[in-house]
Image (cartoon, rainbow, N blue to C red; front, side, top):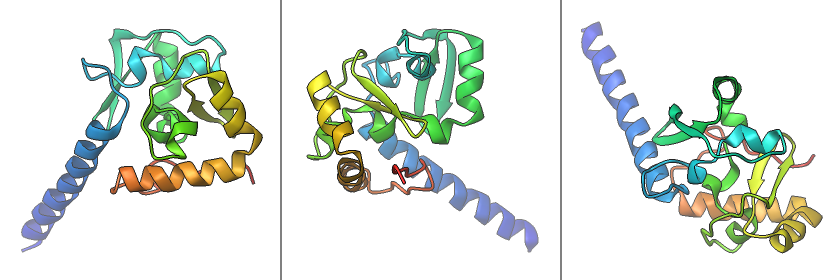
Length: 161
């Protein structure tokens, strides 16, 4: 009897992960080959030098595969990926305040409270950062509407307080 409950629990747990993963795949910023944030190494933004990652150094989290420029960056990401996965699925954070999924310019980004925010240009970056608290809340509300399975516990909700 216990094995039936364990099997049922495992089956239901897997179904939720697949459902979340399918929604993430549909709504996250992925290139035509399926890699997140246009092949960019997410950790390279933290180092101040956005770089393209290598397909030979991947990490997949809940349906999204990221590439890294070196094994050390991959290790850093794996260590705390929920906290540092690019906000709003890797779309422009400012555009997300309007519920729009717009691609980013790798030269327009910000690290705020140890979270990576990507932007389509420097103007949108300045607008978002200059009123961070209000813009961040608006963007998170829109992201939760776009990704209905989003749960702040799945990808830490952060504000500047």
